[in-house]
Image (cartoon, rainbow, N blue to C red):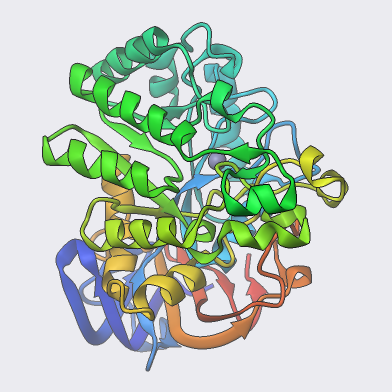
Length: 431
Ligand SMILES: [Zn+2]
């Protein structure tokens, strides 16, 4: 296999270096290089004319489900799905079976990813033992074993004293605490956003205030402890406002937008299709507008999928009983491209910045740039490509997407990890 690659004539967008120029990009022996040392005959050319060449995309919020939930997804299938979405790095959430609250499980995931993954996998560890919200996990040992953040994602620590101590420990180890913001008492039995549509559909409401109260709690604890807190999947106008106000005071808090939360509203639930059931739930058009404004003005700096595979048999039940979440890696770029860049909310380089250098810096990952000497994680995007999502064609083991049949604009066409081509739109998985 070739060791040297020339991406020819693409629009190179590398936000880490403030670059947006049409030029060639050179890769040799797994790294970005300035000049080749090999002979011309040994160089493989990738025609990028009319396409965007950018650092491999990074998703900071992915559920790979392994260990223990391999009927839904495995590290192999989840990373193949990532590669097909243009992602060369994924940050794996710890709500597996067992949850990632011990160094043995961290090591197992890192080893398994080396053996079966096609893109880079960085694990996160739990905040609390067993994600039970009662006792802290061994945060220092988890960091030493290789976690890049701690989170009880899927669950939320209700005990504010425990959360305070988690932040104090995490700060000592320079770890970000990523929080799934949900007050349990306010969401008990909730299925969808509390509002007009939950009333019309007769489904139990899940009010935005349940998320906002925890975001406010996190802002206060981040200010108290000085620990960086990242609020996952922010969905409401109120949540954006709390983060904006806290950031203006210099509080080390951040937020992320997941693609489905700006693509769909709670009205989508009117067909009672459980592929529209997420946690937190789809909100209103007003919330979407606040999220988009928040991204445009820099309040919300991160974009993610919350890729959450579930089996058909789990989702094909009454909506109140179905699990929350959807697969997202393969539709993510297209949705952000369509809803943010094409819609004129912000620019394509800003979307790429959020999905590369910003994500890398949040979690101190040595990724997210095309600087000479960097790992050759490279994605080629066609931001103009129109395509229709077909759930049967997804590489994820699960097919729970609400976007089946939806026409989107923009798609990855080639993905390279450490100088190795791993996927192309034309040929599929290459390794
Ligand atoms: Zn999640």
